[in-house]
Length: 431
Length: 157
Image 1 (tube, each protein chain N blue to C red):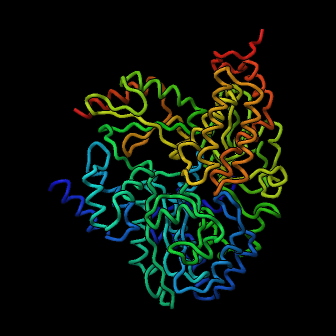
Image 2 (spheres, each protein chain N blue to C red):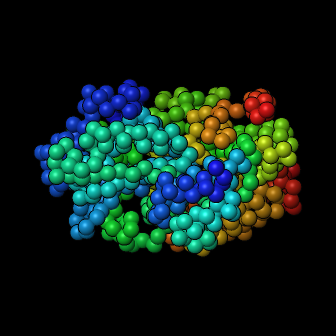
Image 3 (cartoon, rainbow over the protein chains, first blue to last red):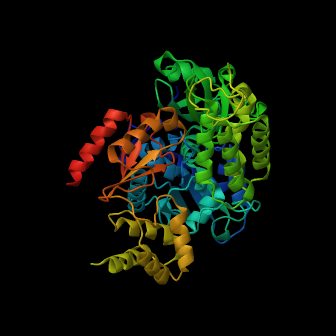
């Protein structure tokens, strides 16, 4: 375990500016504002090799450069705190543990890209975080860190706290922007991307909470020191949210390069009740289900890419042998049926039809054709959905089909080895 | 003050621009003990913000935290996402159904409790978890659910 981005969480009073400053808070921003040009900051963040921590792992410095390069009378910085991916609760630790660090990250970002207004969009399920940010922004306004002529310089920036209202899709950046504008959270067609055409049509930078929390630290320690953490492809640390059938559940900060096995058996203390692990789902409900044999994979963007897996938000759900793959996939698909915004056909209809086929199988009426139907729809959704939600929704299906095909097959033959499904249909019964 | 003037007061306080609509609806819902926004309120907000009624209704029905239908005084929201599912959320659903005599999506006849599914709210380290109004309860099993229902019933009286 490491203590870098979360080092102040639980150590200082979250709303004490004095304690935050005594622990090095705002030194990064002061350095940036007084001694560095916006171009120098963007190039520092590029040098640091920081990649987005929200799920898509887009290079942060490049995103900043795109927004900085736009010429506009108004630009916006948005902190995406709509942490909705099931099994993910790492941003909450930062939001409630050290809100000022995130605001400092937003201040640096705003100065670097030339924005004067910021929004933090916090999911409605986190009322404590919303309350804390409202208080933190008020304190910082009084103390001259937000508002006009910040620290006596020619730089103005203000932050508005916005609450989500219970919509997973709003974690998608264009849906989030729509929601801030007061609309239903439905994703926009991309391109244009938010750096060109974002909030109210203006250039907009959208960064995840954990990404922004890294910024003040990178400014303080420098890019080279930051790159000492992690691997060549993935610099720094990652917050992992661990849940499911494991002994120690919770949020842990780890260095990139650690193996999944070490996370599960060392940091999280192994599987509950000394059961055997069946698979882990990495990155939340939109993530891949990996069998035990892949646990030696290292937490690294490049290594994950080789297996065509995304690290996602860093959620790890450990599942033991008592779980039925088909029942799990059913639950997972029901989640996406509920959360699909309904704008594009492949996501809205695809999830429903996958569920129908899965239910035919778990009810004992399934045939090989149903497995084919599931596979085909999943592929279509992945390729033709409008936004990340629909594209990633069938990930659990495609990966379980790859690694647990036998279990699909046994259900079609009328048998559930875990005893979860009550197959009452007319499939060929086993002996 | 009545519901109408209270709702107008919320709009005055938060602002008349269309981007404030969601925030206004969240606050407007807090005015009702049954955790929903009445048609009257939707009409008032539509008129005050000069936004079509269909759009206001569209927003209120799109977001899970907003409701246009009456709920119980205590809204029991049971997480059915991955981590809670793995930690046997199904048993929690059954326990609540048994102790309250209602199914998911229903309201008790005395209007005290309603039950619904909710997507992950980030209490996975204490799964299976439920949210009742603003409060989160975790590590639930049949016995704890029974005790919880009894405590809430007493609290309500």
